[in-house]
Image (cartoon, rainbow, N blue to C red; front, top):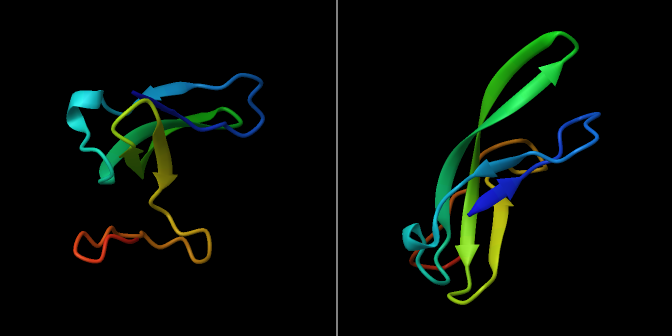
Length: 84
């Protein structure tokens, strides 16, 4: 299982291994922390980003960022209410 995120100014996409299907439970988001390469001019670094992997139990896996687009805080999965 891989997750992809476009880098700024990059011409090609870079795939990052996120999990294997055996790590996932159908219809239950699984959090993963990825080490994402960053480039800013000559400066190169790796940033940690958390994502949720959601497998439908068949062939489709969706990847959601755990970072809120509003204020940049981390979102959490509430297993009892089954919502973010």
